Image (cartoon, rainbow over all chains, first blue to last red; front, side, top):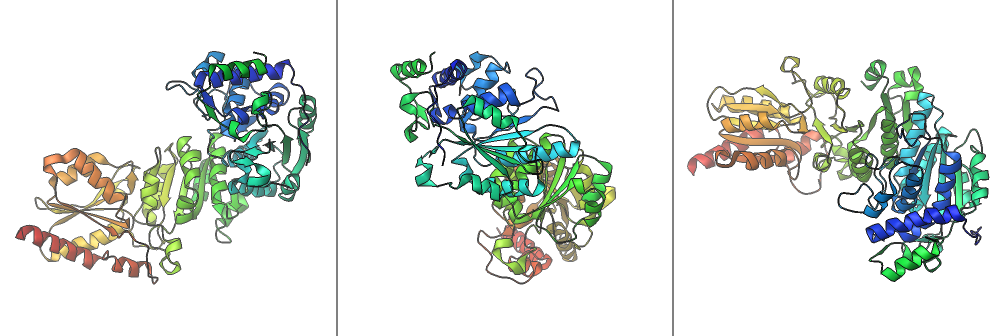
Length: 274
Length: 308
């Protein structure tokens, strides 16, 4: 099993993390570890892979990106802010009673969010339906669904995988943010997923593994999509839970936190160079 | 029926979950790209339908009523209702249709759990002719719909001249005297209400029958109007007495009628799993829901009320 290398994060990755921390501070809560592991995955998708128009979020020909692990929403919000879907000041109202940014992302409320996720194991089937819709309509849209490693414990994910394999949906890409730590502890202990790439392959996917924090490697992998013109793709991204904030890295008890002290907030900001 | 709709509306897609071989073969042959027969994957097909609906389609998802409601309840709640999408859930064998197959296959709380979901429309038509009218009407209804299907072959009691609109109840039989008995029924129980009304007429008891094919949204105005004129009200449903049509009517009456509240009795299935097999009619009889039993309950209730 490959592990994410201890790559130093560049300025852009740290900037995006500073937006995550701004949201954490704004709401005084949030899924810290789960929002930090998928930052580079989303960064590369939004910087280099997806076709979209921030001023026209409903542009029919866009690619769809669903963050199925909705609890990692601050990473998605960071990218959507960065791309101009809404103002950064919304992060200061994360989870506010009248804010648009909740602890899980909602379609129709947050510009750029394709599906309301949060209950795990829903986004992949929705993405599968979108991929079939694109095929029926002859649209070039591709669909990317980012799932957590804990999330793929859900049986519905594998129902969708069976179905996507059957339909040979080359316009669908499953992405696993494989940070090896789920809510209760290490995935190896709570619900081991290995051999994970072989599982996706056996469900009819062309599967590739990559360091989920290596921007160049991610870009190289996503540029090759589809890996097989007759099969859906799976990209297993080896990541670090809490990546970029040393005291949160690999820590199950940093999965979700509330009531940050001023000192902890300072330490988080310092860690990401904010 | 789905094929006919698909011919005239390009949004219509059919998704089945491991149904009978040859189902909708004509549609499969004519438009294979809009016909999906998937595996035993209820959670997945609901999410898949949601994804299609987000991009402009109107999927009709079909499987056995218990599985399309209970098995994938969270997908129905979030993928369909939270996103407020025009997906249609066709539940085969609602109620006691699968009597010989036992309690795993009896959908007797489907209406309750579906109507608890915001944005969901819940329908239980009386017969195949009314089903056709409902299916036509679905094309203009922008909300998710649960369509409770009966066995098929039930007597035709609906009448086209009475009209059909989602959310509108239908007076199927009018009373001629003041303060009549009022039956409020849905699904196949409307037929039994009409027969019970005939039996009561033989005993000189006047009864009106209100057919509520749409349990949600409820036709509040018509129901309140008929309740206000009634001497005694009996709700009739092939469903647990918890949370179905009877509960909806009682809630409405208590909220809106206050002092004018007529006596109301909910006739339906008891709060327990079925312990018997047999036929749908056998189980209805065990529950006291066949016309002579319904008429007897009315007579008994009226007698008790007169005695009091």
